[in-house]
Image 1 (cartoon, rainbow, N blue to C red):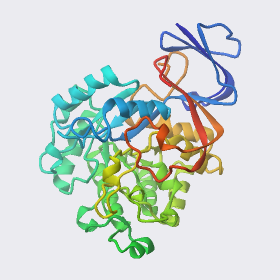
Image 2 (cartoon, rainbow, N blue to C red):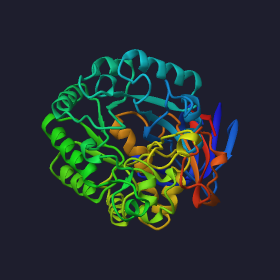
Image 3 (cartoon, helix red, strand yellow):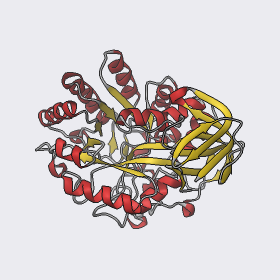
Length: 421
């Protein structure tokens, strides 16, 4: 089967390609890129759109196994396809935790059967995510994990974490770090500051994140581990990442769209849809994150897609769970808050949402050169519309962006030559 994508602006960072041309796909592979191709079994006219490698999300929560009332592999993968994502990494804080080959196999097998996109499991750092005993990373890798993480919390025992990092370094497995000093959280629910005082709730200071960022960078430096810092939200995180890279530490870092699209100034109420971890920070932090992205200090845009039920998020902010959905709003938020104001270029956008995530994982993705697997997103960056949670494929509707006017609509998502949106 030959699929032709014509008249689109092809943005492919792997070969620094930025041109209006045609892409021919045959048997799931990019066969030819040329303005001269005219014939195919099926044609998609991408005029006015960008054609990019399929987006890659290093950070999603699919809640499967065990918490499938919030999300499952099938609905999460459908949400990913709807958002332009062709590969996603699902975090291990499921029930049971992804700490053994059996759970990895469950996810891999279910994804093969039910998911329209590539789903890569992330294994836990410690057994049961209890923070005491390191998992058998070699066994997990053989079963199919792409990285290890304790996402949802930090491994607070530095000795245990160092052992895990050493093992991961030997095996070439990336370590994805959720940076949160639990002893400093002390019941905090939103950023420490004016809004926490106004709503009469405990706040989460920047130090909660910054202390563990510093520790994890130092451990990565000592062990030689490949460290990826998840959902960075503070000004000092950006500074430390910059300095670590200059020092030769193998570190990359991600920023989530909600952390560059909103600050605490945008919190209009104590609605739990504004509650995520790390929390929305100050305008000063947001500006630093945007600068870090624009200067390529921060490598990746990930979603931290964290679906919850409507009933859970309807609770008071002190009782509701942390997290918002992100797979179906990441593209428009990135276009609206980074691309349109000129903070980043189209090439940088694709680098951070596809090419760089593939490099973090060390996988053959994020590239639509001739001969590569045809994982592709087609996006109209100029299309204006209103975010409507009722159109989401995810089970989760927990987002503060519902009803917001944005630019950037995903028109098509193609996985190995198959049009899944």
